[in-house]
Amino acid sequence: MLWRGRRIRRAVVLAILVIVCGGLLLGVPTLSVAQSGFGVSKGLPKHHQAPDFHLQTIDGKDVSKRALKGQPTLMMFWAPWCHVCQVELPRIHDFHEAVKLYGLQVLSIGFADAKENVLGYIHGHSDVFTFPSAYDADNIVAADFRIRATPTFILLDADGSVRLVHPGAGVLHNPKLLAFIEDLVS
Image 1 (cartoon, helix red, strand yellow):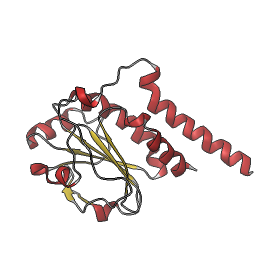
Image 2 (image 1 turned 90 degrees about the horizontal axis):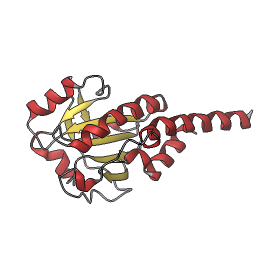
Image 3 (image 1 turned 180 degrees about the vertical axis):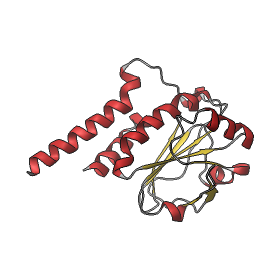
Image 4 (image 1 turned 90 degrees about the vertical axis):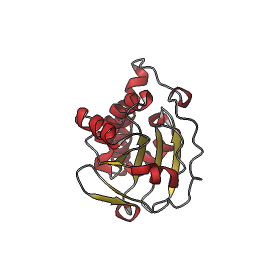
């Protein structure tokens, strides 16, 4: 019975990897952080507590570090003008659909642009934004997280600790994220 449980978990992880890596396997080009046009992010040190933050999602719900406590979260800081973000967002949607049953949530945070532009992009791509999305007015939360690149991904564990800071494209191929998912699924 134990063997069967491990086999099922491995099959689930493999399925997630296939979904996540599908673009790479099909030859879809990936973009580097240098191509995003917004600079390089050093981000927060890993395994430190995330800063406290408060945002409101576009559907009016409050989201904060406290509200996320107990649920691992992949935060994506993005901007509508960022071509790398435009490529990554559909991949993040597919990833979210594959992992949400295991308790990992995705939170997109639009910043570095006018609120109307962020909301316009979200509404124009409602099939992609099936996860909570918020607008960071005056880039306050981005500054607290030391975000200097679009996109930048921050992985928080259930305790609110930063487990991964990943500027630019390719977060879904990051070995630390994949190991985190494997631990979450098993």
